[in-house]
Image (cartoon, rainbow, N blue to C red):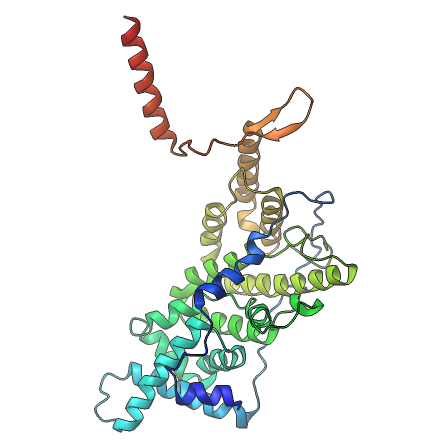
Length: 363
């Protein structure tokens, strides 16, 4: 076990060396906001012949001597929080377990140690022979903060954060993510939902949130859309394509498995897709990638095919209404004024009031 991990286990509330969470969040959102305004190539879509490329690998467990201490630490912390009568516990052990639980929450919130975070996520699923996960599920109200923080995570960002704040110059490996951490996290999500379907909705929300920020790279379709302007060499481009493919395969693999484990998820996935559809004036790259991801979902959720196609047609009609052709023949979308309200009901009321006042003045 590293010195850093030992420090956290022994002093869980010590955060003097942690970066400002606001700075971390700002850095993590940098890539999301960097959507190309114009695409350098025509958007294409190549349908998948199969979904064999989409899968979630089994998580790799650390060595026994390095992992046993973390499993014991996590089990004691969760067990102490769950036990209704802690008076029978040794006072020192009770205090240590209480601080340990706070340490777990602190780590999930700050996400400042990738290696330890990976072990904690694994231990939540495996410690106590699986008993820890059962304690969390049976006493979800006592662990609501822990559960909330788990479902708010994005497991594909941590490696980039560490490199951005390490003071090192940007390299070609900046697009690499810690896939071991992502696998540990996604397998934990599957275990939570398979044990109790009440976690299906937050799991779907988390997955679709990640899918929206991922290029729809498959074995047949290798076109970058969202991340098409963050590299300046062919090597970096290939690196990004591979990174987005590995991310996309794990996300769709997890989503398809969730829908297989909990069939009622087919009725929840479409409302989620419809409610998150990009606004009609959003960048073309964002809208195109979103539609491609929707079509990818249809490969393992064919029951929502008609709904998805109708949704896409409706969104196209909304865009068509905004199209204006200038005198020089150029086509553009007419953007709303900055001060213009987006509430059609409110806008209508104001229009009626103005018309009434005008008519009264004429009379």
